[in-house]
Length: 319
Length: 306
Image 1: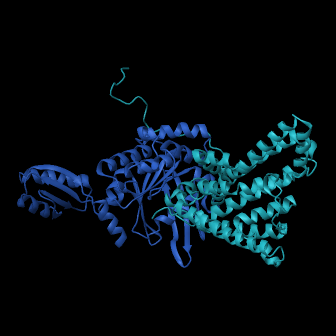
Image 2: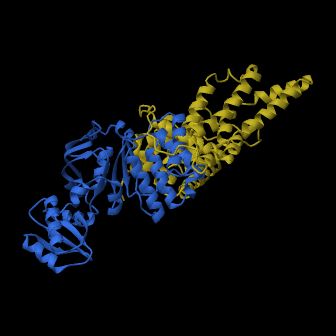
């Protein structure tokens, strides 16, 4: 048979697919995987992920030099022991977590604000729901698609610091001070990622533009944060004599509630960063009641997810 | 004849509005057009076939699967090409179609291979790595067809497949649809307001109005006129020929240009013989003879007005 030099190389006739079709049980994972793959394509995400661990990195550098210096003389060793005695290890985890909040917000906005809003704009639900994929699969997939990157973003530097501390400073109480610090931090990080994922999925579902959803979420975040900072100043000025309500209101923001839950789980009031000992330390704000904080947070997240559930409507097949 | 879907006495209500009212029909294998005015219940019918809407009463099966149970397996057997533009933002053509395949349950490697194959078939081979959002209207229509075909459905639901296409794009799209439905091994249900498109692609039609079935059958049956009239095309009109036909007991109606429509209480073959005999005696030259039929549009309007 003589090949046709002007014809297509490939056989372009339609052929039906007769390969394997998997049972449609885990469509949520297909959606989550695709969301994560889309997120990982953004170069700035990698930068923010690296930047989110800046507190731990600086702390590791300080500890490394203190330890290296101590090997030089007996006096330096004594100074190192004094420095380490002043350090509350679990507070370093708390500080690392608190200082990662801004990066966490930016990453949430980057990967979460358009997660449903962009689908609304592009009528992507027609594609999702005409396949064997339920509304629940869609929402769970979108939620996991935001949750997992946030969990990894917060968890990786935490784990790195834990491994460094456990290998180098275990004789200075790094593990013995709180043997459960790692599981506790896993819970803290998971709760934080869950709060951001639930809220951004809820907000995103309300819009047709990712930017509008992002601006709204950032607005809610910073306004509520401004309020809690005001409450915090008020608490400091009153030298801790403010009513209990003020104390709790210092946690009434997206950022604040995460710090409050972290304090309650780690069972600490917090201490200054990098082991510094200021002459006039601020009055530490006690942790909120964990059960109440978790219940309130779960309620807010449930409201956000319920909004998303209502907004993701059945497919309009014909306009 | 075997059927891909069988619906019996389906009633679907949205609040107090009845979208489908005791609707019964059978959708045969092959290519079927879904016709009806706006608000007739076509949308609801497609939603019901996909298992999105649960009927209040009645039963229905698509490939033997009960549509009232909302089984997900059902949507593995169906491909939907919606009317509206729809895509997943930020994805290339091949990424989008492969993802649609994965959503339908295909293993990732198979989905990617098949996406390339289907995009080639739909004429998007060279644009497959471009972001879908940069596609033209015609390309977006094609990629919607590709995402509906990727998992090898047994039934393809097409909603206004030629919407927004230029004449050349329309021709191409109709060719694609006709090829998959004729010899491609899958059945097609096309919902469209453009009757020539339906006529070109489909062999059968279902006419829906006010949530009820108004007509169903082959296009040829629907276009057929009562009483077997025939159109006789002459070289030139001849009054003597017309008079002779009337004297022979036939009804003669004027047609377009040199064509006359002849009707008698006889089969078209018998009419043919009688017309030939009279043409010989009146020395009239007959250039064409065919069984008369109406256009699909006329048939559609008549069904709606009935």
